Length: 282
Image 1 (cartoon, helix red, strand yellow):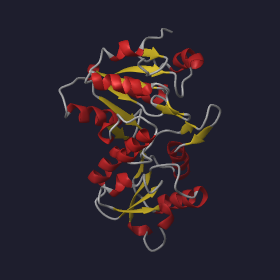
Image 2: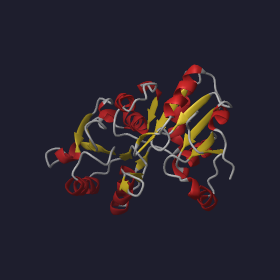
Image 3: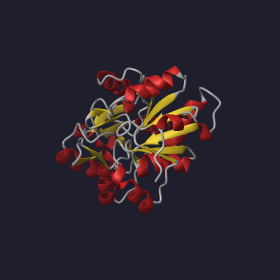
């Protein structure tokens, strides 16, 4: 397993896509020195975007969270979230009625901008359930896991409506030892109970990468081989980037540890184009 220098890899590409959690930040805060990477990209006029499955907050709020941690370079228009695809789907497919959601009020930004009547699952009752025309799973926080998950199941038993999952992650690390269930994991459980397939947006789904690719091509003429996807997780960032035709680089600051990497790559068959210790340019 050959470890390469991240700066030398980056220099070969016109545009860089970064995952957020595990590449730029982790459970301890910003990856130490990561601000140097964005200073380098800015100095060399190399465009970059944060391509994330985080639909817990709007792009403006996600950018502000980086700013509070000390990373000022990232603007809201640099952020491409899976929540943006959920909004696009609703704009195209759901034209009236109520969109019920599981998540925080902040995460509801993505569906509120569609001009639909949005309602947390907790506020669905007999007076309005027949008007619910979609259910969106946005985030693992902001609702009562017992009451609202049970209510969601029964909404889907009564209403033949699309269910949109705006974050495909099944779990995320809380610290070096522990993980927490993410909304993608909750969605899988619900699918098994109601016997229906949900509509999922986020890495490794190709639609996520197409959405990001199209946004970049609106700004400049570019091909897939001009873009590098930087991620810490084989089954989302690397698999999705590979399938779409991007070159990929795996880093060891998040879900994949250096001592486990070779075994995971061999067992999964998911092979990144490059492997680097970190996305920090020193």
